[in-house]
Image (cartoon, rainbow, N blue to C red; front, side, top):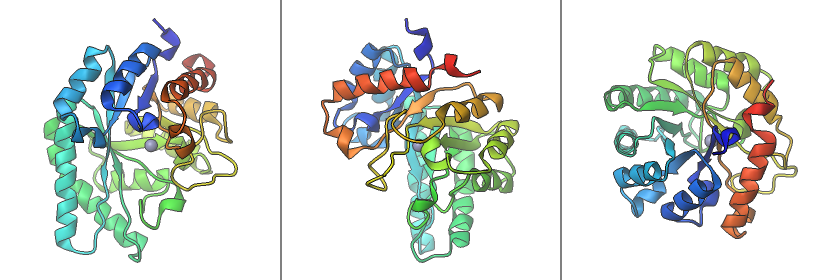
Length: 280
Ligand code: ZN
């Protein structure tokens, strides 16, 4: 019905107060096409059932968020992290998600170079399982403000480098989240590099508020901040990416609003700032 919404997907955490059932019903009614599931829903709904719920409502499961967090102090703890990633791959396959998003992790006090080595080692240990399950792994570089404890991979260049280091396997790529990479002067070159290697797997949108009052839960609605969404989407399109623009907003302020009103704001902002017809 809504042709211009054909690339609209929403991460369920954007409406965190809602159950998966509530997300699916409201998203479908709003004309949303893709749903990126968060794993916390599996406490109430198993992955196969979650995927079915999305498809039965006429939408696609656009991805599963999230796994990763590979660096750890001991070999045993790193093994446990890998096992959690293998489970997440099985969950992605069960719910029909083509992509599993990896927030790669960082161990406070450990050199970032060592964390990156452990990340590469962890991803390498998951590639075979992911390939057999038909699930693509997408490294999400995070903003450098998270380097201490969430991700030692903080630029598109580093994400591309890990893919190259592991031999550029077809099932390993990158999730580009504008919140994390908008500031990067190398962004055009690194998006083009990822595109030419066929590794642009996902695109996440929101905005960067000024001032940002919380490092995690103060993401802005598209148009509410300083990110040049149109330019970044154009870079993605020119690099061969034509998938969803997935709205992913963590916001304590917004989670306090009536969630239907918030969803309506998301869809309106997406039309204004992310619609395909805005791309030259
Ligand atoms: Zn993201």
